[in-house]
Image (cartoon, rainbow, N blue to C red; front, side, top):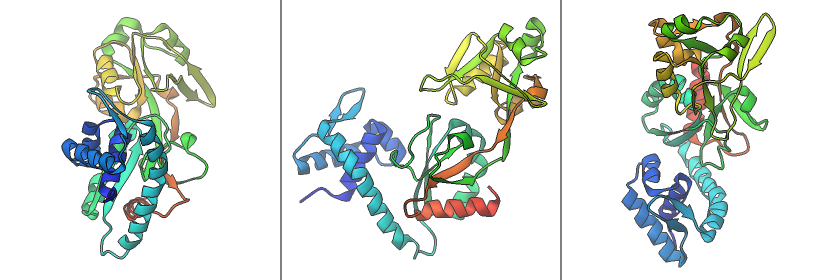
Length: 300
């Protein structure tokens, strides 16, 4: 008997996740079940598809070629099955979203609970990372990104707050000790807590007031991964280690409690809110269509 669809899906899940444990976490299946499915697939094909070590799982040459051909084919199968889904009384299935950590923290908490309550037969998977990825190639139905990072051939739907700001703040004790900046360039003489993307890019701090835009690259004692280590950066700022630059909504609880003090607030730059984006070149899966319709009815 040839390989079955479940075994092929298990192989793709493990390969994309880079391991059986992570594959189990994102799929909801057990690691042992995934391992058995992949073993069964390799036995049926007569070739090893994954190199397994105690630390990682990577595709063999045969596995890599199978992934390249299998990904589009499985999406075609999903699309074909989803045609039947429209005849259900309520949409069902899995909605996979690739989102930045900031969206997982600031945007989705107010949206997903009512969506899941409205569509109890839909399961949502969230992959939170700040690097820009091809959502289709990553096996996701849609992503959330900001306007300047959207691909032109994607359909974009507003989601979450339509205006956000980057804020700078520090503990009062730090400002009492080091002084309060009066202009963004004053930050060059301060200890600043920086963020860096996994790609290595370290975005400058950008400020705007009365049409004047100022970009600076301050230095400081702490550099963290953007998004994923933001809570560590906030903890350091609360402890008086320096000045932090982050989404205002992320810092708002600490600003409201006066644990952090606004710095250069008249210079805080506003920018447009995020968008849900997806390819317009394929049939819209029923769970994604339900989510898009939900967002449009709720006004984003």
